[in-house]
Length: 116
Image (cartoon, rainbow, N blue to C red):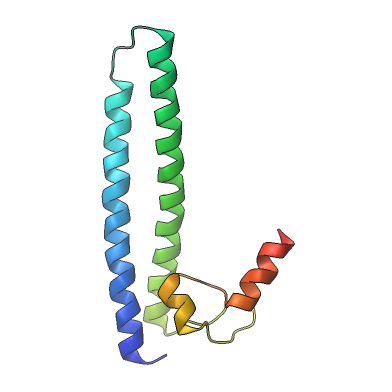
């Protein structure tokens, strides 16, 4: 991969990383506010509990994406970005534009998904 392409994807990844951090901080702040509410009945409690579960799931999913982005940024520094972890072929630019932190080429991704 050329340096200009790696730089392009690095900028996208760093921007996404900052957005995820803001999202996680915002959700954590909301969860703190929800936990400090005085709940008057079971309906309120159920509503707050449901919102907390949804927001916690979002934080977990975005935390996973953040970890994947961190690994990918390290690959850019190491010069191994854009190489499939399974077959060691190049991951196509089209795929990286859709998912810049992809670790598998499209063929290997299908193999991994079918094996799950």
